[in-house]
Length: 168
Image 1 (cartoon, rainbow, N blue to C red):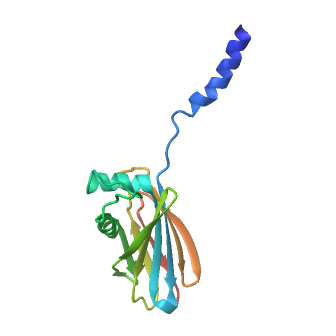
Image 2 (cartoon, rainbow, N blue to C red):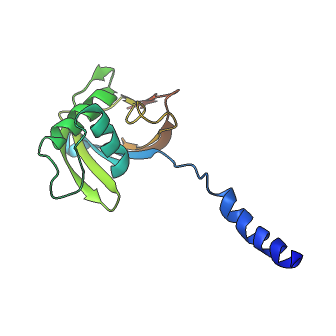
Image 3 (cartoon, rainbow, N blue to C red):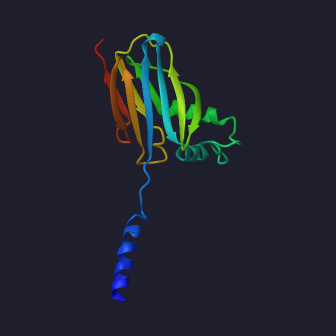
C-alpha cells in the first residue's frame, strides 16, 4: 500500500507545482518607415482579454470585444487610449498617430496606426506605456524597420522609452 501512495504522490506533485502559473502580459508592436509613401506604418498586437479589461476599467464596464455586440464607440476608446499611451517623436518632433482600425486574429487584436508626411528619419523615439497602468509586469516588444535597419527592444514600466539614431 505504501508503494501505491508513493506513486500517487509522485504523480500529483508535478500538477501542484504548476497551479500557480504566472500569466505573461506582452504586446508586440511592429513599426516600419515606408520612405516612398512618406509614412510610418504601425501594427500593435495586444491580447484581447487584456485590452478588454483595460477598456472596461477605464471607459465602459459593459464592453465585450470581438463579438457581434461590440459597441461602435470601442474604436474611439482604443484610438484615444493608444494615442495617450504611445508617443513617437521623429527627428525630435512629436507626431500624431492616426488610428486606421483593428482586426481580431484568434486571441489577439491587431491595431493599425500610421504617421503621415515623414520625409526622412534621422532619429526615432518611442514611448510605449500600453497596459502599464493595469499590469505592473507588462512588457511591450517593439520591432522596427527604419532606413533599411532592423532593431528590436523591450519596454517595461521602469524603462518605457527608447531612442534610435540614424546617420543619413
